[in-house]
Length: 402
Image (tube, rainbow, N blue to C red; front, side):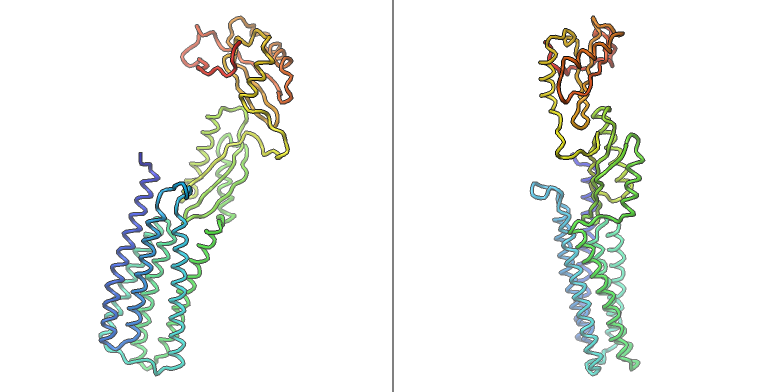
């Protein structure tokens, strides 16, 4: 049955695919217009800008690939999902932005050294460049909003790739106007400035993605916020091993919480679920929160552990075989604390004196001289004939009767 998380994943993937296809269509149309008009209008800058738009199609294809594979459900080989595809693709987008920036700077420097390389473009170049600026800036705004909405650094990186194309068209306009005014060198200087901005953005995307790939956690300030959220949950005594990491814009959280060893397993699970729910609300983008419930502080690996349940029940059955009160045992609950175990016995009250429970507990403890046994506590249950509907101890007989 589809879950809310699956629905959210499908919706996010749909938005990513739609915005990328729109970008690819716009890039294809603009590339054709700019190359044709650049040739007709004798503008090498506009032709180069058209080629730049064609390079954006490669970026769009890469985004579609990463979106498709990055949104796939976990499988046996990728138990944590495929979101790293987006992270790796974001690195590639960042590299493309750096290469584009380097190309602009290279061309601008050579034009500064040889102003004669500039041609006299015709007026037809101006509307084509203006159309490119408006279309690509609009595409940037649409894409960046979608990227922030779905929390995808990959989509945001592609948005900045769109803006780099808009900025390159501005350079074409600057070259055109500068040529008319006789200040062709302004175009080259503007190209260097804009290219530097694009390169810095590409470098940021590469750095952020690299941090994700090496499992860098969130900031210490945000970790402290998460700690306060955990400690605010009732019945959480403390927590430890709080770890975070980033994956394709999502925050993954692992934490161990300490609860009382005397509560039921189901109550401990409920407390853990409350911690998980509040952490997801706090992060606003956590894709997975794993909460491990502990009933005792971490113990040294060299500390001997008490046996598991079946071994203890077998040894108790042997130790108590001569005690007639074992016939009254309805349920046996074990409370582990380090290398010791406290045994809680639920006894049918038939034939037992409720005023002598202390003596009965002492008899059970004396008969079971086991090194890991800390204490025995007894609780009397009403006779089956007088129990209410919520008083039955259940069908589980955990200590076999004689």
